[in-house]
Length: 322
Image (cartoon, rainbow, N blue to C red; front, side, top):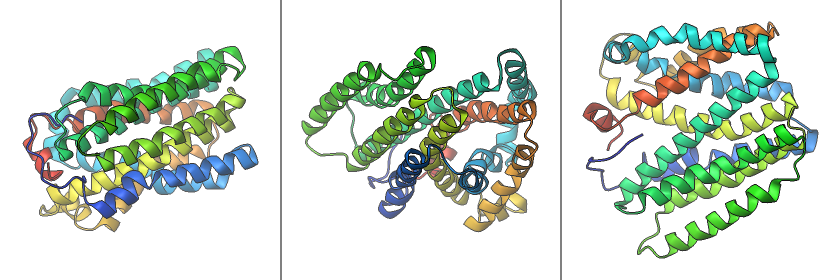
């Protein structure tokens, strides 16, 4: 999300203090709870994973369709990008056939983690603009991305070496980076509380989740637990932001788009309906079908990187109260 050259309203919060603390910051608490369960039981119970996928993760991914599909202007704006949907879905079965489903799953986890880090960086940049911070953009960007990359790099080192002994190689730079960043923030005339709260919740969670996965790096159970724990807060963030945007932008329209944007329960219902085919496919327990359906995640990553570009899109900026 780029917020350059915009007049940001006076509030330091994206939506409001309560909403931001609950959905953008506090949602990480569920991730910590899931990590605790994973450490206690060696993974997450299948019913919990299925419930979270149905209620949060699936709707978060497919809520993008409430903009990109139901809005004719947005659908037209994406143009030829829709032609990439089927080829991206075929990548999974091809990789699964050649290298196995676990390799493809690790690849999806890597791309998902990068997508997640970029989303957190987007929130950091918005909080900077909201607070009127006109300096240290590179410091905030590289600290956010670097601090979130190091835990996953540690996990990947365990994948390639089959040992978690390299933890200090990644943890020490992470601690040094955090100390440097904390010192830099302390020198500012005013603390940007929303930004600091966001970073102080998601970074330790990321370390805990991927350290759990690194204990048995090729275990799909541990990999799934780490992915769910780090993404569940993001699902809350994304659904709240999408609803905030859609309600502000489309609630006065007619048709299904207007209906889905008037009440949050309608919005969630539409997102759940869009995600249903993916959930049904999960019950088949076929690696090739699962890999094909995960291809929709690849398309989501690409599409999502386009629809939130605030620079040059004043209608989007107004919908987000920027």
